[in-house]
Amino acid sequence: MDPLEFVAIPGPAPALASRKERILCAASHAFAASGFKGASLRDIAFEAGVSLTLLNHHFGSKQQLLEAVVDHHHDVCRARLRALRERVTREHDPLSREQVVEEWVRYEYELYGTPDGEQYLRLMLKLADEPEVGEPLRRKLDCSEAVMLRAFALAFPASSPERRTWAFRSASSALHAGIKDFAESAEPRDDAPRQDAREFSVRFILGGIGASLD
Image (cartoon, rainbow, N blue to C red):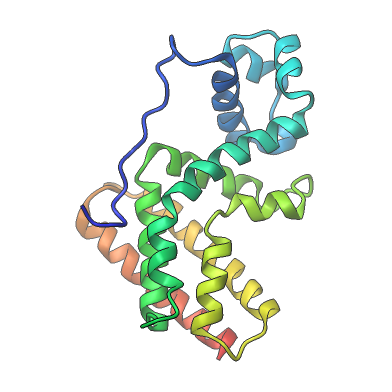
């Protein structure tokens, strides 16, 4: 198996899922669809099949529930980052800039192909600019940030950490928006359109990053 090939991790069957798991699943869908302000705790409790009192007992507040949702997605995503980290942050025989971007783009497209990844992307896009999402939580929303900033430091050693962070976040926003547009096309899982979309994303990101960090 290719080290970056993903295997979808099925969620728990409804009858077997714990109440906390059902709440997290319902909350993830609600925040991804309506954002932090628009999501209703009462609706989340209803979808999860629990009382509002029980939801508050488990998570305390809407903010704590959001943090738990992001933490859950972050943990799942981080476990899948191992192969990407090993490939793009090696100091011995490092990858070229082009290869670094290719690996990152491939990772994000393949991640979207999993149920968890698709939901995580929707959550990121909805919450990225919401003022209620503070900086620590914002960093967790894009779980590849720490890995790619290290990769950028190796690929663009003359640039400052601040410029690398700005360049990464700009590129990440463009990449995720591109994946979303691709996903809304006629056959988003077909190999040929996926390859074309990935190659376009690589060229677009390389141009932007090169202009920002060279």
